[in-house]
Image 1: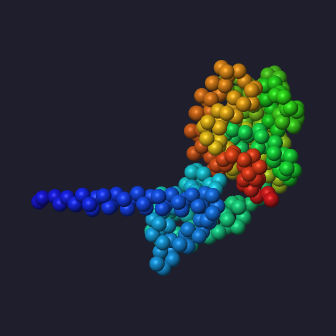
Image 2: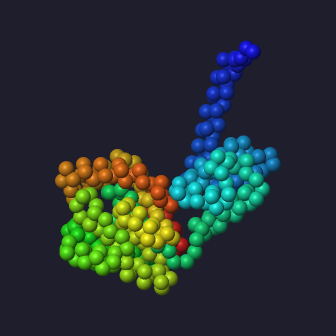
Image 3: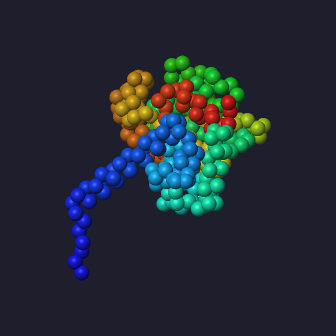
Length: 299
């Protein structure tokens, strides 16, 4: 049988319609990502009578990924918990799935996120992304947050204070802490110095009902996840790669060779973003700090 080929005008029209649909869905996701519109509002539009075609055609996974601070790992967990397949579109959900998804998003939007009680929150990200700057802002503006102090074998940078920014220890002392099992996590960073989190203060704070924030490297975050499965992992991202480069060079604490080594490491570290539960972009320190604090259920 002879195959029928649609007229050229039909193919062009179909292509234009597909492009327009993609752009419309992208606009919806952007509105959710910038908090111009809530995810619940998107659901309501998709399930209205008649339904909004753009919202109904959006995949549930895409909608969840557009929600601020909700990363790929957490989104996948939520969909699994709600029994929603990765390929499902908002408009194609069954009645029970719709009820569960809407209830979950309503709870999250009303409280900032879905969980309760003391929790361990890990803030990690590539070199020079501003982890220290964000954690310092939280320390100075949110005294209710228990910010864990890491130990390190490197020397202090200008302005850093022992016992406040880090515990600056010798290699021998670090060896002792590891050997006695007193570190929750530790790692060698940039093939140079070691960093680690003393276990005791973290466990004591959690036992007393206080949430704890750890500002550590990506290797350490992986160890914490293994040691404490309930830990919430937050990945701090730069606005752009060029901005990350500018920050690293601008702080002037490393020579050119070390800068290049750290940038090479940063490219590898950025690829780990999907391992984390939430993503926070550090465009503005105060805003990034607020998002991290919100994830700890602190106001």
